Image (tube, rainbow, N blue to C red; front, side):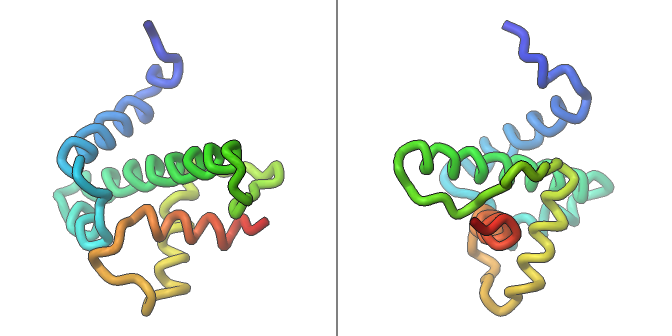
Length: 123
């Protein structure tokens, strides 16, 4: 079986990073502290952070969509607006800046991303 979305170099690299990170953190989501450490992991650290945040953003959107399909109230509404992969890090950074005193280092990255999406794409 061949997946068309894996044909691009970016998609393959993102899948590799997310898979590697998923194996390394199988018991829990990556924390803010761990993501900061990843950013400092050599020359490719910032790229790994971006790939991870894209995966978190897409995962958050899919989890939200599934919850809505199961009857939950929508809290993220794109309303036809496009959400591109290159928007993940700016969304994440803006949420951290907007609520700097709210997020402790051991909280999951996914919490920040869900809050960012819920704020920027409020229903």
